[in-house]
Amino acid sequence: MAKASFLRRFFRGLWRGITVLRLALANLLFLVALLLLYFALTGGPSRELPERAALLLAPAGRVVDERSRVEPLALLGDPSPATAEVRLRDLIDAVDRAADDPAISALVIDTDDLLYLGLSRAQELAPALERFRAGGKPIVALGDYFTQDQYLLAVQADELILHPHGALALEGFASYQNYFRDALDKLAVNMHVFRAGEHKAIAEPLTRMDMSEDEKTITRAWLDDLWSQYTALVEARRALPAGAVAAHINSYPTRLAAEGGDPARLALADGLIDRLLSREAANDYLVELVGAADDKGRFEAVPFERYLARRGRPPAAEAGKRVAVVTAAGPLFSGERDPGAIGAETLVRQLRQVASEPDVAAIVLRIDSPGGSAFGAEVVRAGLEDLARRRELPVVVSMGRVAASAGYYIAAPADEIWATPATITGSIGVFLAFPTVEELFERAGIATDGVGTTERAGALRLDRPLQPALAETLQLTVNDRYRKFVAIVASGRDMAPAQVEAVAEGRVWSAPAAKAVGLVDELGSLAEAARAAAGLAGLDEGEYRVDYVNPPQSPRQLLLQTLADRLGITATLEAALPVPRSLRAPLTAVRETLDVLEDPADLYMLCLACAP
Image (cartoon, rainbow, N blue to C red; front, side, top):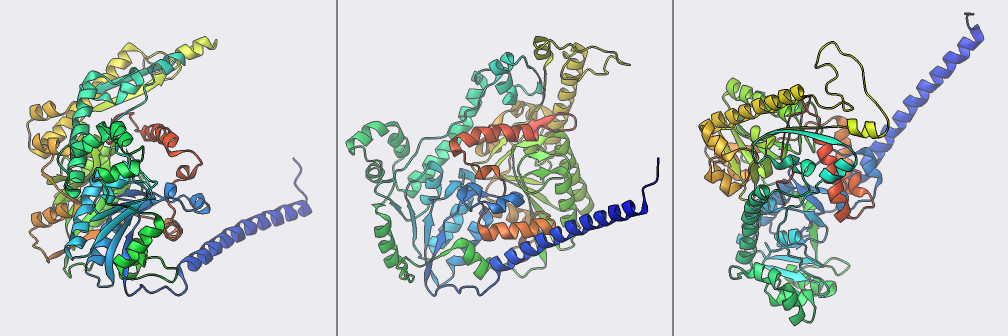
């Protein structure tokens, strides 16, 4: 082959140099643009807080324990509740900081942009609102329309204001899923499911067209428990007799007709709200209540995000020891993961880093997870056991909304397990599922044939039938992992394996029921779990401070998170898609299920229907 001429090589090298320079300049300009945007958003003179105002608690989007990873392209979208996440800790800290602030005369709750709070998180926020109320400051909630979840937050107020053309939508809790057996049959897809645990119903959507009677009984039990907590909370806050909420829902058509078809008047008549006021009338009322108005005549209010940024968090104790709170939120995967999911290696590395710090006296692991990878769960469990042995640190688990299956597996070895009264937990079971499409190929006129060096070679191909010997092998593998799961729980909870078996088999429990059968030690908040961890470390009040450990983030992610915070957007792009929320929810559930099915051995400890 002839050697390229000097001129050609020169221009080729020059072009490559220009390309490298162009890419470098493009990256540099992108970084400069990000920095300019950052300074534009965070720089400039900051407005001082008014001398008298209300703290405005208006969470937008979903209230979470830990915010998800920010996608760069999400920054290009318009801020909206669909893309927003608010940390529960930020709400609690803002309320606690304002409780003793003489400049804050009242607290106003606005729920219009709240998409999801949940009973568990509402229970943890309630004590902070009670502490605020104890200082003699009023709490008022207002909304154009209260969903059942929004009402959870609004009902914590001393006074509830609803728009005259609004409504209160109470309906109860439910757990419904899609079932795909017939669809899979029509597509000629054979779904092979192996499970351990009589009640491990995660595979039912793949093998049935309805919920089994056994699963209905179990699901109804924990749904009833949570609903009784919801109604008891509402009836206590509204000074209503027991059964008032159920009566409002069950006789809704008759009661609505009696009020001329006006849902706002019905909510008022049934004592679920206090006033019907238009936005203008509500503003005038709040101006008088707060005792201050801005230059536009609106009641003077400071959004909790701005208030927290200016005032800072409640002062921590000046102590030499720390109780470190590490959050494990989202489905559990093996390997590394960004915030919004639990990566086993990421979490273990973070725990080791925290445990290596000499001033850490105890660790609280906050778990909010339906489970996931069986292998990832074992990596986390072994890591926790190792660090506890090396430093003899007390480890207390605080369960959030859900800590089930693999979420319970990593909790079981802790010194103590705390759960909120509305936590869903248990689901001690293991399953393996995968499809084969040999019949689909046969219908399409496609055959699969060949040779292998052993009987197992090529046995896991999706285009071949499942061999009986392989099916037996897979079931034995699942049974073995289930026995190990039971043994881990028995060892961690100081129970006999037979005792664990009696409450395991994939059964889901509400927190009060889980406590009764020995799977949970105490019912309480994250703050109470932190106090318990300090007690196990031999520390009294004032001798320690609670330190919430931030998830590890790269400099790029930190910059993106700061920009997202300032813009009021966060996390995923799919939430910003122009799809109605009612249609997006089931599609998101399917996607999340598929995303989590990537265990290296295809073994999973996962509960999909653990929260209403």
